[in-house]
Amino acid sequence: MPDGTEEDRALEEVSELLGVDATTLPAAIRSDLKRTFRKPYEIPIIIAGNAVLLLLLWWLVPHSWLTRLTGAFALPLCLASWMLSDVPATNTLAPDRARVLAALDHPVQLRRLLLAKNATLWIIVTPVALLATLLVGIHTGQWIQAGITALAVATVPLGLLGISSWLGVLYPYHPRKLDWRWEHRKELRLDARWITLVLLPYALVPALAAVLATPSFILWKFVAKHGLGQRLDDFELLLGVVVAIALSLAAWFWGTRGALRLIRIRRDQLETYLADPEKG
Image 1: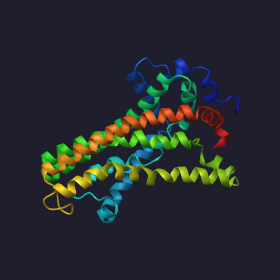
Image 2: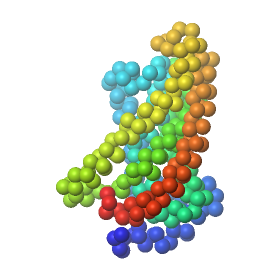
Image 3: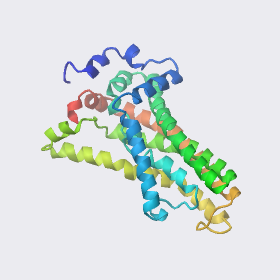
């Protein structure tokens, strides 16, 4: 492990300075939010970039290229999942290696740390998706469907967060500046691994969203009076959303438990990797 770095010194002072031993989940969330909204603001910038990308594509390409959902309220639902389709939802361990290393042998603190990271992403993403829902509601005047959609965008993304974090447990990578990547450009295996893990969330998170949404689509296929190609009525939409919420909450609960179990199984490998940022 390289000596003398700020992160390495922090490893010796984790309990108080890094908040791993926060006595409550709210305290852990406050600590993670403070960390997230400090320079270089990586997570907020990535989420904002994904939101802008989705909005551009929404007006530039046919909606069928982006989602099977139809109707005006497909936009906020897609926006909520797209904002999570990147490394903040998957590479959860390595960017916070000091606190994770400190918590590896403390299950309560480790669970609290993972939940705090989920909560931070939820706090950033949900207000944006709710604002989009409100704007669509104002535009369409369909306030019942707006309310149902708001319920969905506030809960369904949790299922994505619970499972997508597995990727960062199985294959973490250290965030390094591009000049460091350039200096190590001849290490082809390292570069290939990094590029793959940067791009993979764009396929993984939408795929998870599709899996969680499939039961709702199956339900709509049987109950929708006018088929999936037309706008669902309020009751039809509510039925599908209730199914999606139930599955998403279950996925979040079992996904988080699964992530903690994977960390226990891979404890030694994670400790070795996270302790050395030169592994890239």
